[in-house]
Length: 400
Image (cartoon, rainbow, N blue to C red; front, top):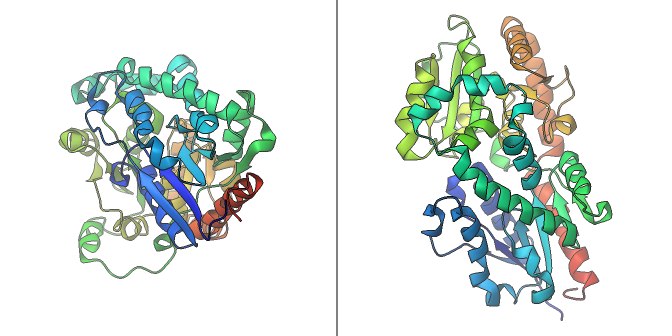
């Protein structure tokens, strides 16, 4: 069958406003439409499934099958490892290409099963009482879906004929789980051009940053969700510990967080009582304005494959101080365009060094920006994805 345009279906779990990953997925879909490709995004229509305790996430994932008949009309079905769509490849007789933004099974093993071996786990437990007061969903509830999705992702990795991963670390993890390395393409995440282009003045952002009084700004950006699992994965406890130990007279501390409205006030109290300014649910269009007014970025996650917030901070010229996870060893050259640390004390040491040496901070920030420009533009990323899609479609005589 021949088509003038390659037709690609994109079944996603939720619209983009819920997370940085969601914004990334929708941006990717929009980019495909500009490349002589016909694409369509599909979401689960039953919004109540997620509310079911323990298995809501799994049921939502499985409900994407409701689009079966429509999906069958596309040449390529592109899905994330958070869906089970790739398990339908033989039935649909279509090439289904999953992308792994992480290995869900490895994440479950590291974060839930082997919690005692996590670095800085004692620091996480230090905040147990406050987590209880926040009324975040307990790990016992969220880990059930975590395990089920992880096991599904293992089967996807073993059975899919083509796989895309966002870092060499994820490729290594999938190979250890039984995936064929010859079927895996490594394509690091890219970020939108708004992070690289000059931005117009924004009165609202200027009013926020005016309070920073010209001090060096230590910043964290990301999702602070409604469950303890996210708190642990993102290393929110590390943010609290490192920032609370920084001298308020020398530095301004900022957390820009995407958070469910019901938890906004609780998180604000958690941060602000430690002298940390909390900017909740900032519009994505405003993020580059605020990020460029920072100086140092904290990468505190315990497990992520290709942190978009790290790449965005680099593109903004911030000097990253981060743990060695995911894409970090591919993006950061220690001492050149950032610092890679092993524990809270090391992170605190490097941050204090940068605070005391502003020229070094600027030098590293500029090097980080050059890396982002060279390796992490979304236009380059989409080109690489399309090459994988077209090879797969031609091999199966779906498109030419």
